[in-house]
Image 1 (cartoon, rainbow, N blue to C red):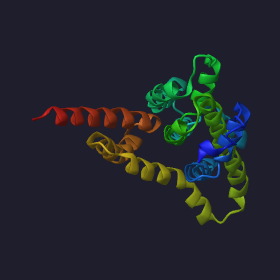
Image 2 (cartoon, rainbow, N blue to C red):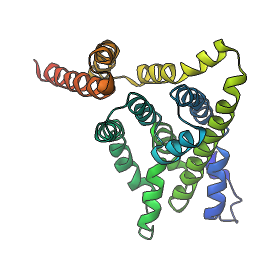
Image 3 (cartoon, rainbow, N blue to C red):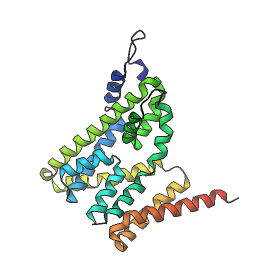
Image 4 (spheres, rainbow, N blue to C red):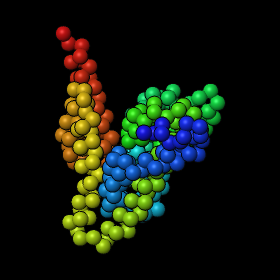
Length: 245
């Protein structure tokens, strides 16, 4: 248990909570996420991006769906504004997660810059981990604990990108192809498992149908229009269904 990190007479300092969070890199959520970045490395390499560019995208964007949108839009020669808009739409879903998490970790003396820094690490994996584990940690230790976990998964993911990117050309073509499809398979299975509401399942179905259509119709903006049209339609239908007697 997280709360057993120190003896009863020995208070656990912020640095030790950080190390405890760091140690959670050996956990199922962390390993699944880090492994998925092997697929992102393959996607970036096959799309013509250098290793350095893939690492910068990971460190600055840090949301695998948004990174895939960024690579896909840039590879399709979409305009800068269209690319930025598509990435923003993909990442805006993280805002409610951050808003719901911050009351659990901040104290009256927490500097605002630390909250902003923690927010950068919050994506699906970190948020689910934080909501499950933060209540087990004393309030003063929650922020360094989650910062440690965030640094762990980001560092592990970047290391996975380096190894995968460098080894791809030495792997058999079938293995490279499997890595290339690892990211979309990860997304599809994760979204399917997370889709609980009717609107969520409908949005997933619309995305699977509209994605190929918009790719053929508007290649440079296919991801943007798939999300915009499919997501809006799913939301409206779901809302109408809830309002119906």
